[in-house]
Image (tube, rainbow, N blue to C red; front, side, top):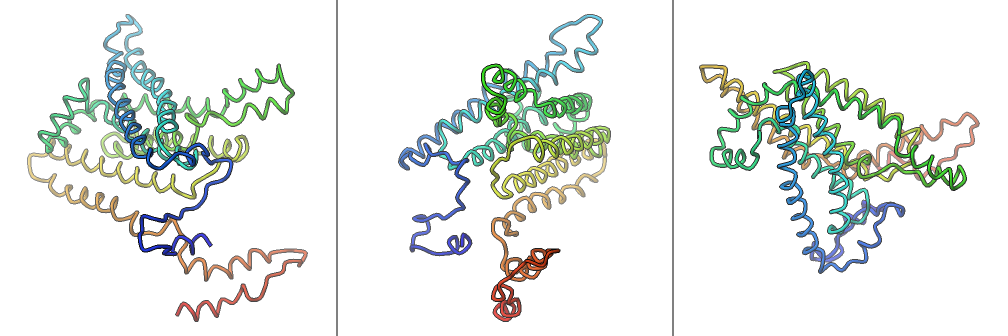
Length: 378
């Protein structure tokens, strides 16, 4: 019925009616539904301005943290300090970022559900980490100056990435190893456990358990978790040719994440509403973006290391990746089930439903008229 309603043209003006799937009742943001539409545009503009301001405000902090290893002298512990201080500091500051973003989304943006807020967090948080984690060694100490230089000389982006990224492999190795501790801490569920122990001293055990759930959705929701995994994928793909050790560490991090979230989501955490594949499709687009960065990186390396024009052979690969990034979301229908799957999948559903050892399964004959559907489709 939803597919029929979405395909129904209610009025001649396409902008007058917009039919979408309703979120779960527990996920609805009722206050946003009561906001007048006239305030939506102005409020969202303020929200976007706050997001941009957050990026600008974090620039000097990230610049200071990434150079903390050389700014402070720790004496005999200086090698260890230089290896871990920048990545630990950056990881700590990034932990506060999802809460700031979600505060902006809840205050200024008109969204129907918390899941849509998580999806918006997935985009903005990934963009932040792409700049301040993946490209932090490229932009260096002065982010604005480097961006201005790239804007004036776009061709230099290949040379800049080829010069800076290979020198920072140890930074990314340390960053990926530190992500293993993040998986271990999430497996412990230390925040729900702490809340449970506190509430248990005041309330009953059942009430304390209910009050301790769910975990903080700003830092441990679908949006933040997907972004952290996407960054590991981006680093693994970006250095797969130049430094394969980074790719191995990224693969190990993803395996740990698979075991951690495979247990938490199914057995430990409470059920969360989903958007039906929106997060997955966005993750695929992040992977395609990682492939584009890999092509830019390798074109720059080949241009720098080779005296001939061999790097020109790699340039078309970047065009293919960019075309795929634009083409795939438009070529495949993932928001709605295709008619073939709906109509001709009935026999499989019938076989699955009738797998009843007691023989008590009943299927209405009219619903299994696959031959009639085939004739109509032809």
